[in-house]
Length: 82
Image (cartoon, rainbow, N blue to C red; front, side):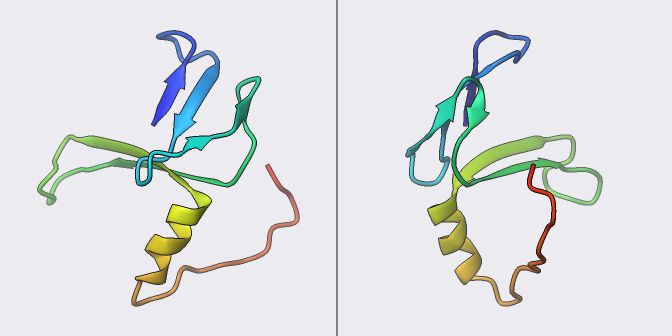
């Protein structure tokens, strides 16, 4: 869950993990620790047509969730860290 300084979402003020509720470290509008952010726009042929779902997970909750996958997450190394 993200909280911004104003309605225009100019500066990120606060982030909470949607799973455990833990506060994620944010300094000067920048997330300073591992975070998985998801945005899904459901379209036709789903039970959520026209809905947009957003959530944030701390790295620990993300790790717990992907442990339950039958097919592992694809992981590759990146030369550039954003």
